[in-house]
Image 1 (spheres, rainbow, N blue to C red):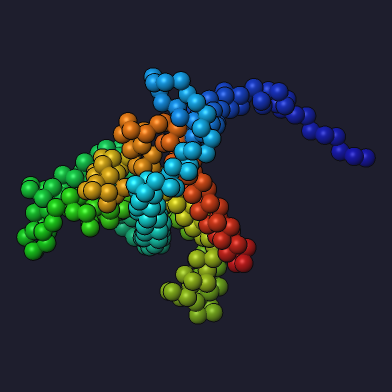
Image 2: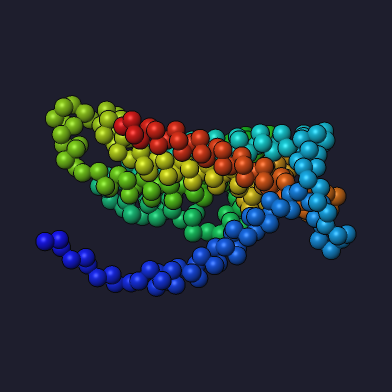
Length: 300
């Protein structure tokens, strides 16, 4: 005899009813603005001005043909790529190092974990202001300490240094989250595997390379993808610290979109076209990275 089917606790319509508020909010605040933005990118939309007209691909053609727009777009792409690569590599290397060290039994390890995670609890404005105050070339605490050993700079006012200071702040503020993801992966690895590896002579770096690293590949994939998405679309910390300057040294794709919205000389449709390019760039980079990382997981 076939076993009787278990009685459903919730009907299909009850599940839809429970999910509907979240789906409605997602549609109103995510899907609708995204679709509207794509449509606006084919228009000369400008709020409170002349009636909106359909211009087709004009905004995209202007973006890739006008010399000034090409120059700014190229600069924004270059800075965005630099931020994405350095944040993804340095943040994950440091986060994994901290996770491995703090996964060991030691005194005050929870305190150390809390200290590393602390920047995550601060708002972006506070994160930026803290570093601007410390690196103020006139009376900043850290600036004075560096000056005492012969290191002098305008820091956020230095076009050669500002972008890397922004990258440092991004890593400092998010490394705690990445470390937590790695810690969860490390704590899921059975101790028996290390004991078996010890019998075969796998200690130190060999144990990390042959046991730890393969088993935390899923955590690595998650962290790299989050880093890529976040760093490509970073805007708030740039506004707080450098506002795109000095000059255009911290000018990235999100700031290019913002500048075209607020500058007043371009239509909102043009800014929408730039944001569509930003989305496509993010999608392509993340898609390729995900395929590569998933392939590595399968190989292991």
